[in-house]
Amino acid sequence: MTTPTVVGIDLGTTNSLAAYMRDGRPVVVRDDTGVSLVPSCLSFHPDGTVLVGTAARERALADPEHTIFSVKRLMGRTLADLEPELKHIPHQIVEREAEAGRKVLRVRVGGREYTPEELSAMILREVRQRAGNPTKAVITVPAYFDDAQRQATRDAGRIAGLDVLRIVNEPTAAALAYGLDRNKSGTVAVYDLGGGTFDCSILQLADGVFKVLSTNGDTQLGGDDFDHLLMATAAKEMGLTPAGDPQLLQHLRDAAEKAKIALSAADTAVMQIGDRVHTVTRGEFEALIAPLIDRSLDKCKKALRDADLTPKDVGEVVLVGGSTRIPYVRRRVGEFFGRTPHTELNPDEVVAIGAAVQADILTSGRRDRLLLDVIPLSLGVETLGGAMDRIIERNTTVPCTGTTRYSTHKDNQTAILVNIYQGEREVVAANKLLGQFKLSGIPPMPAGFPIVLITFRVDANGMLKVTAKEERSGVEAAVEVKAAHGLSQDEVERLVLESVEHAHEDFTARRLIEFRRKGEANLEHMRKGLAQQGDKLTAEQRTTIDTAAANLTAAMAGNDVETLDRADKAFAAATLPLAQFVMDAAAKGYLGGKTEGDLDSDAM
Ligand code: AMP
Image (cartoon, rainbow, N blue to C red; front, side):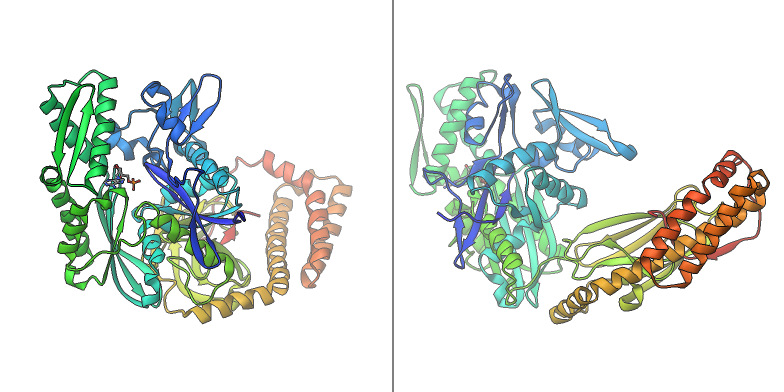
């Protein structure tokens, strides 16, 4: 078997798996026995070994304390986020303070603590290994995953040694697996009923790009609930009381799941525990789960309502998740939408296959199929001197956010102008201006003191909201602009190509801008420092500073980056004693006239 270099991975709550493309056809990664699913389950041993997958799941009963399930529910969440479902999570979860007051969850197991990212990475590593250790992957997440959850998934991939090319929505992947992007336009409903969760997503396809119009679901509805219902009736019928008997409970659970699966193909199934036997018919099973299927269809109704649609508007229905193998589920979903759902692909594998299709599109450079759910061109702001500071890079999957820290470059500057640009070029003049706003009301402070955080937030529909906040005073301003729209694929490609062609010249232009800007600020600081503390310098120190300043000024008038770099370094060395005196006297306050100016990057 040739081993793939890039795979699509469905990192699921219950199971995970990988697929890849070979000669234009999807191949699902399987073990020697033909099994593709890797249970998303980990088992920690006292000797430090960690079992992953089936081996771990088999230890669940014997060693529940050291077995971890459903890590996906913890990804990118805080304890407060999890509060409503905490009672369903059997693991010991703690929250720790990380840098910048950020809180991170950790799972305690076997005397150690692990982040959800680390645990997911162990599952990803197993999936990756089975696929022959590819280096690149597309990983799928539920459509409702927010930024933090997507970022956590990306980080898990990175920890597992994968270059994560893209995070793709699971319903989008399912639609891709069926090639529905070739329809060019239309509405797709994805009904995803797995072991523990249910999701319904309504996608709109326009010009080959999928947009998630709405999602709805229930994080506590799935095949496990069908098992529980069967267990309860069977236990009653057989006169068993499993409460408080984990062993018996597990046997019942296994028997129930087997019976449920058998009923997808047969009219009756038998559950046997010891010498006790219970027979269940398909009709009885359907009556048992009907209220739960009603509940799932209610969620579909809500999703449609949120998208301003009715079932009639849906052109294609895709089924995802092991529980959609149940004939009754297929029938009910078909009736609800008034059309036969797609079931040709294995519902457990369809998301991984879609991820593989997406990975293939991204790496083979195929032009016939389009990029999905992404920012086509980078978004950023203009910094002093006309340089483009990218805050969100192109090809980032939406929704997404990015934040960068800036400050002022003049003393007592009370306002800054934020110019928002889109494009790949290093100088804003070559990019497209999307919008502009002013953050005013900054209290007078010395240059460099205000902390201005500029945040870009792009929602699932490509709407960009930019906020600027001065942290010390709390003053804030925001603007909403339409980003990412109105560009054809050709236009995007042309702009990206242009940025590559101009890469060298742009890079030099940007460095020149940055050196000049930094030079101006440094000369200004020097002048101020000399006025305040100049008398403390020796004559020799003063001469060194004057020479360095003259060299810097001359270099700034020229166009040579190397000369500027040298002059900048020499100036920094020469002004060191002065900086020391200024810092020593720094307690003095400032008062003066108000000024306003542009952004000053804090990074320099
Ligand atoms: P998933 O989370 O998508 O892997 O789905 C797992 C769920 O699908 C579990 O509850 C399984 O018991 C269930 N499942 C798998 N195969 C079948 C089948 N043939 N009939 C009914 N349920 C199934």
